[in-house]
Amino acid sequence: MTSLRYALCALFLLVSLAAHADSVSVFQITSFEIEFMGSESNGGIGFVFSGPRITIVGDGSVDCGVCINAAAEGDPISFGLFHPHGFNLEFGGTTYNETQATLNPWTLNPFSSMTVPDSVSKGVINNGILPGTISLANGTMQFELLLPVGLIQLNWVSAPVPGYYILFDSKYLSIPASPVPEPGSLGLLVTGLAGIFGTLKFKLRH
Image (tube, rainbow, N blue to C red; front, top):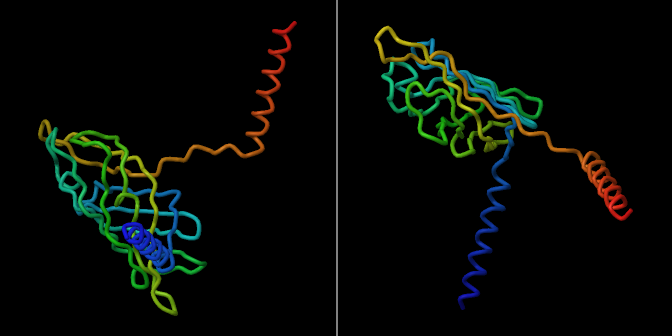
C-alpha cells in the first residue's frame, strides 16, 4: 500500500511538471543590466534583459529608501520592489509594449548583507525566476525568465551632512559566463597531455 502511495505521488508530480512545461514558456536570460538612476529623485531605473528568442528593454522605479534619500553610514541597504513602467518586449520577430505584455515587479536579493556605503555584492532577482505574460492573437502566453547571478555595483557620493551618503548612478549586471572549451579543444588538450606523459615515461625507462 505504501509503495502504491509513493507511485501515485510521483505520478502526480510528473503530471504537474509536464502541465507547467506545456503552459509556461521558459527563456534563459544570458545578459542583463539594471541601472539605478540615483541622480533622479524618484528612484528611477532602466533595464535590459536578453537571451535566445527574447529581449526586453524598459524603465521603471524601485522602492528603496537609501536609493532615493541621503542615508547615514551603516544604514542597511534593502531593495524593495522594482516596478517596470514602460518597456518593449521582442519575441518571435514581433515587438510588444507594456499594453500587450506584462512583466511582474521583482526584488533584488544580495547574497550578503550590505550597508551604506558598501559598493559591491553578488545578488539574484526573484531567486532566479521572473514571470510575465504576452498577449498573442490566439490567446495569452505565460513565460518565465531564468536569470543568472549578477553583480551589484553601487556608487556613493558624500552628502553635505558629514557621515551621510547619496546613491549616484549605479548598476546591477550579469556576470560574464566563463567560456566553455569546445570539444575539439578538449581533444587537443588530452592528446597533448598524453604525448607529454608518454615522453616522460620513455625517458624514465631509459
